[in-house]
Image (cartoon, rainbow, N blue to C red; front, side):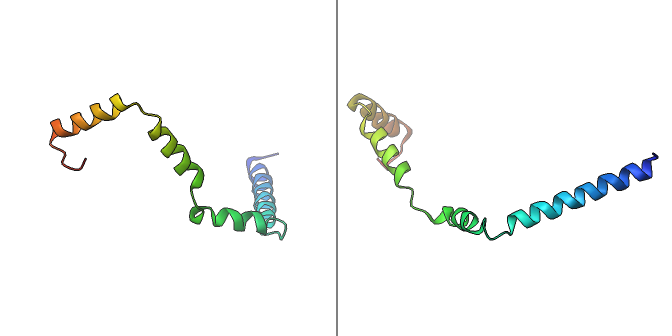
Length: 79
């Protein structure tokens, strides 16, 4: 078996793999999954907001005061 035959076999296998993946991606069974994934950027981030707000509520008063002091030291007027 020479190099040309080997390259031809590899090319044929890659074409079959490409066609298989394309068929899988465009099959009707996958459409609901892909539609859901396509809408993920527009979904509400309720979980992350809750997690962030609970984390900020758990900070101690001392940490909050030291952060305010450091803002004033830097000249940050947006406190």
